[in-house]
Length: 315
Image 1 (cartoon, rainbow, N blue to C red):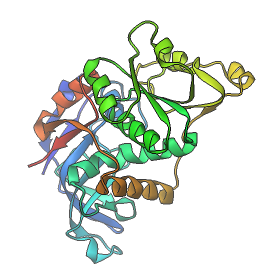
Image 2 (cartoon, rainbow, N blue to C red; image 1 turned 135 degrees about the vertical axis):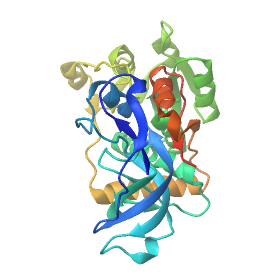
Image 3 (tube, helix red, strand yellow; image 1 turned 90 degrees about the vertical axis):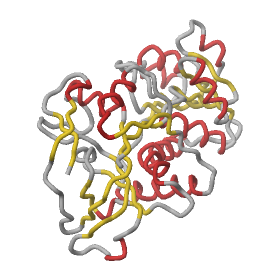
Image 4 (cartoon, rainbow, N blue to C red; image 1 turned 180 degrees about the vertical axis):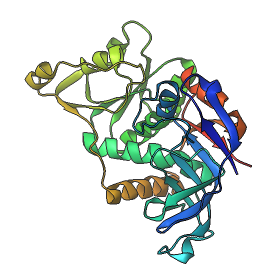
């Protein structure tokens, strides 16, 4: 089968399409014929530096999330899964391939009424956004600031915070991204590259921080007493380096997502897929690349040219 190999760390060009051994569904696994594969910012960072949530040494096949049809099941797996559309994740390796062996306990069937590409986009981002909103305990009437609001998780946070009854402030870069945030329900959209952007935003109760650096510090300064800031990324390449003592003195909670149990992970994915199938949560797929153009997908993400989720498509 075809797969995308990483033989050395470096620029997008180090990703190479080549042959790989056919995977099999071992005990407790299913074999999925992939139709769509997620491409994430964290995967571009790993490709470039070797650092990330799933470290490893080349040569390897990267990739975490994929979706397709189950073509075979291993021992101990319910035979009825064969033929079903599912989404699932690897342990950080192996998803950039035509066929992927996944743990059956971790795959989630795609509900009727939801397209497979949307399900793949919601698999990681929807679970993350659902968990973040729960962690922050967003309440009706609060003002919520979403950083990188045009990204995969950000677009969903805008929608979920709005559905919770909050006033949503979207921070993004450039007119295209600000327009998308407004389309998704943001009440106010500000460009965080423009000096004085925090004055446009005003005081808030919750910050979802995925950028870090100066943007995170600016957002922190907007929090009212009793506010909550949930940090879950550092797209700027820099940590927020917030003043913990100042936060405590101001009655501000600095939060992070806890590692979910397998049951929580599964429930959050099911919830996101269900909301997508019901039309209440829209997965924004901003760009699609043929499988062979994985290097272009990585380059586009690194150049900050993307919105929403980026997918690789397999024929």
